[in-house]
Image (cartoon, rainbow, N blue to C red; front, side):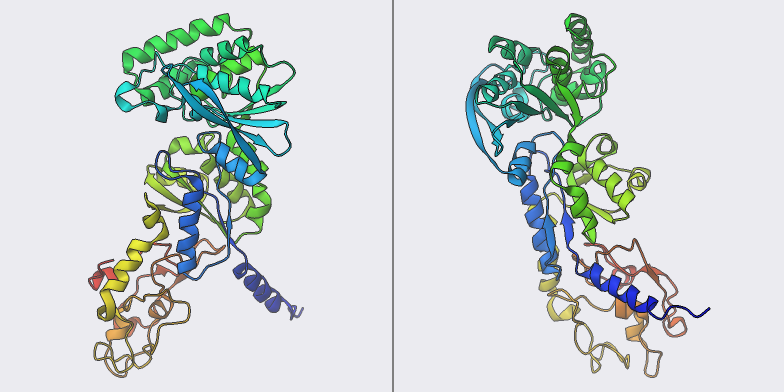
Length: 451
């Protein structure tokens, strides 16, 4: 049977279609340093420098701090403010969001009871109260909200929501309104102190007292939250609202991604870049990076990550099929601006060799940088270009090497190219055809590269 003559043209058409697709930028905030929209902007600038201008900007959140901003940017709405109490009882102004439909409000616990509101030397996990969050929920209900989305991440409290419940009851309860808690973890009620209290300044003895207090509190609630997944979110505030006001507990990452139409945008992209301040094993249990990784793996879309700190081992990366993790903790590093300035500063000493260059007598040395190159070009990545007259043509490694930067992000996980001129250059090492973002080849390192 003769092969279909249209098969090759169809494959080429699919390749061309892939190249025209955008790169989906879907990072979370870098906690305490960079907001999610700022991370997206830096990624977009870096991609544009590398000649990839088509991007789909999609800052994400998982129910932690930053959820209010992400949902308001995507869904539209306005902000309002209320006078509430911070974790230590001081009066502050805190904001909440009202979506355009008029019946849905977004309350972020970090606005009223967040850890960032308390100085490091003032943190007291036992004394911190979620009362301000309850006051903010009451203000949203008073503004006419029929559904209140509560983002419990980033809290300074481990009071099981006792302060929030008391504040809501003082305001008259929730009435017919519905509370939905967008949980960023799956931790149950009884482990809230053990897992989260040390992050809020609690020593081992304090953790034991907090765990004992939560057990006693669970016995007094209308429903027992012990053993229920996600009730430990926000220092137990998710469990307190669930037990007293029948709040619905939803995985925050899944809820936000669905609200942003992430699946449709992901399938239309050639690749996805996500990120957060620190990636570790906890990122795979309820956090947005883990949820994005699961969806990308199921859809066959390659996933990369830019993080402030990488504490995820290779096995964890394989679980979500994470192809590359790059550490970059500032907007300049995310954009790749520092590495680009360094390459420019090297000047002609690292220029691409020409046919008449005494450093290279390779008969097929390039006379100019290829059209796909970045604004600056690094030197040869293969010893072929220093071979003597009459040597074999430059190996594919030299011709296909790409500068560091945001280059060649595609659907293929990794393709490999071998050196074609082993007889002349002795290079038999196989290398990936693409180098993600800031990587450099072993040949350039051996040649004394300073990148």
